[in-house]
Length: 532
Ligand code: CA
Image (cartoon, rainbow, N blue to C red; front, side):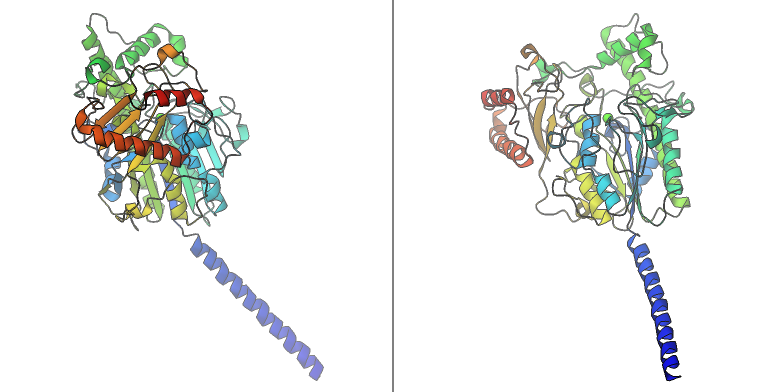
């Protein structure tokens, strides 16, 4: 009896222990849920949607652009005024954002490179750290996306209309695979992003990368904006009728808007070309009977209007994403970023496109909203680079930042507490050399900028020596010459600052490991022209 009673007691005790363990498990489960209340990240990135077309950075287009949702994000978050790209072209910028490394480290130096799935990236780290991850829209890194629970991406540049998009089920590297989706790409990419968020595993925080193809050339827009700007003239930048390096003293020509005019005319004459990236809206285009300046003006009007129409559709879709977060109760705990992979020339210096260390090209417009810790309506002037985004994500997610990633989290900067040792210069290097836009590297500080145009094609694309520059240095004082109209490299009043910036430039190259150890040719050019 006693024995039986003891056994009964033991069973009872075990029951209590088991029940207790059950309660403990529940408590732990609650803890896990609590831990996973880390913030979500909605990272919206456009292609080439440059700061001059955001309106919130001022400029001659500010009264023309449709930007009510960009304005809303700016009112509710913080706008970065000195966010810089380290290599101003699509594929390398995207690789740097993901890998947290400059181009010379991750090897994605030019448009033609891809990113191997085995290479580490911040999406993999976030996934490992308990985040659910997706990327939808433009990818441009050729090989299969890695680190994403879900991806649905455009092959190459992708199409504006009825785009083919590729998922895990129908992936092929480069341009193969995928299936078509009906509609306008910016609308489709937004729909897919909200669908994915809607159907996510709600026990985990998420990172959703929503990457628009717009506003990239050929700047095609949806029907709803076809009459926007129809009967008005858009103002031109002061440097629109640029007089070339002979007058400005710079080291290179740049890419004139006249080249875009030629593309419009070529695409008009040859419909076959429109199967490529030359599928411009509203052809035919003609400059018959116009002189050179009139023809350039007509090209500009079409270009900038088409560009802003694409931007208007992005703004709509940012609005849809913000509304979705509001309605689904996710707004408070979701960090929202809107940025572009680099800047773009919209007629400044008479140019279009990007690539150069000049302001319009290296500026990444960037706005971030996180009401829990980021001030509404604030502007931050610290020099942030695209390499830093990965560090910021890791910081918000509370995961370790890999030692071989090179970014610095600017979370404290966004709270208004800029660290005293924060960088004073952004490092820049453009690798994809051509005659008019030579390979170059440089640094850009708050006030001064210096760049060395070595003009060597390196291994990626060899050009003849005849295509190398004859001038090598550009220097600009952004306070005195914010539009970079005069290369002040030979102005004696800057002698000392130029000297110290050259020391800084070498230091940056050494610290970041960009020393071209395997390229004697470029080192010869540096040795021959460093003291020019
Ligand atoms: Ca781009």
